[in-house]
Length: 501
Image 1 (cartoon, rainbow, N blue to C red):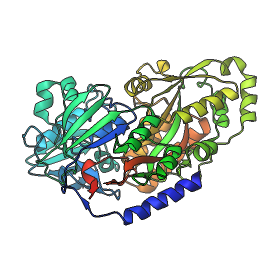
Image 2 (cartoon, rainbow, N blue to C red; image 1 turned 60 degrees about the vertical axis):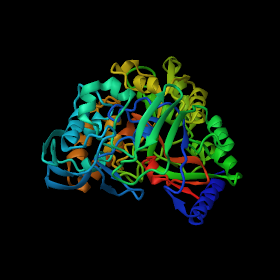
Image 3 (cartoon, rainbow, N blue to C red; image 1 turned 135 degrees about the horizontal axis):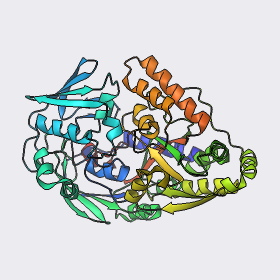
Image 4 (cartoon, rainbow, N blue to C red; image 1 turned 180 degrees about the horizontal axis):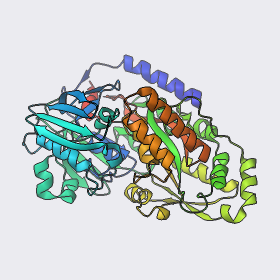
């Protein structure tokens, strides 16, 4: 299977080279995109998950962005300058207007920054921006001040969306989420809850126009239904397909499979505050029970790579030499047999339809086979995320499956939110980890940062605080007339797509 997928992807690359002339305006059409779930929020400061990001990324412009090659490039900010170890200035581009016709100004940038770093606002992204301690605006220049040097600042800012201060303050956060106003290439049209979100092309967009008159993002939790929609012509682009579906689509000349390795690391989160995984022996037993090679090659087969750390080769801070996890179910059974009451403590495994349930079910079976009592609880994505971030940490599920991406390609964006005790996502409270993560966050010396992250990865590996699984690859299915280049940060920029004639 793995070999076949590689061949498929090679064929896709050759097909791209032979693609007919492309256009963004030769003829009008809409695009229908099947997502794995409904966006949990369209307010870009209130959520960070694929189904939300796929949609709202097209409604809003960011302060800076990454091009398809992964380079940080200008967007709302036309240029920037590091003026001291703790200050960076951004010149705000003239001529950008929000979808209601109002100009985007430096004050909107200032408001967006202060909104997302306000602890009372409660952004799930706070841990990725809380090094910013002040923001000021003078003319068209915004100055950001950080709490000490922060080398990952620019990389984090690629996902800072700019919202209109006048709209948010007038209507309030809830109404803004229901009908967001941005400055991006597509404008919000309507949200049919539980069914779809529709965007329309912003004809006055300051940058590159989108090729589609409208984009309809539909919530289709069942992967087989997404594939069937594409085959029937009811969808133009579908997300989160697996290697079996990719092979199925390969035989259809009117369809294509698109893929890219991502910066996303799949992991098994453990609730360290309650049995059974508050016990280090139980965590080690869980690690020994999981056949990561079997999962990546036998179930996935699209180029996923086993990982034993919360970073991937796509991140700064990835450490060579971290020992891979052992797979030894017999050793796992010896541990659980020595602690039968603890191992048999009922444990809930939280998940959502956006995740590959084959993986979740395989993990459940592997754990139960060595003596655990794991029961899957699948909910919609908003409920899952709320449960995973429950302020009362003992009330979180004993297990949860995640695939974390920060779109920043820096270990700060994954290790800090998942491991630092101050983060609402973290299940860990270890002072040594906090100190190392803070050192890596503020040092301007790359060697110091790298050494700190290597030690972080070692500590997590030695104590099984989190069980990293693999570097994820992403597979999309699409009609053959759409040119779409998947990226490591999994952004779906409609205005970077093209239509073949």
